[in-house]
Length: 47
Picture 1 (cartoon, rainbow, N blue to C red):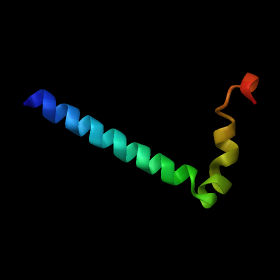
Picture 2 (picture 1 turned 135 degrees about the vertical axis):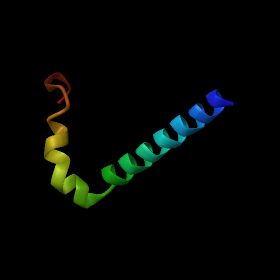
Picture 3 (picture 1 turned 45 degrees about the vertical axis):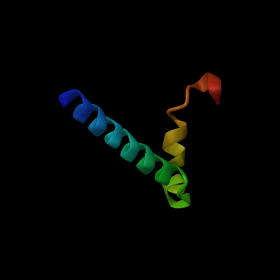
Picture 4 (picture 1 turned 90 degrees about the vertical axis):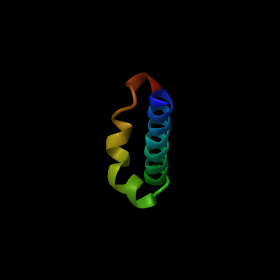
């Protein structure tokens, strides 16, 4: 039972983080404010 509860809360936390990340990435205001900084995280060979 403890393993099931731990897995449930891990999945729930992951889903919430993913939802928040998706909301941020699709927000024009967020991209306007942080897009420049996020692009700095991309390795130079991929730019």
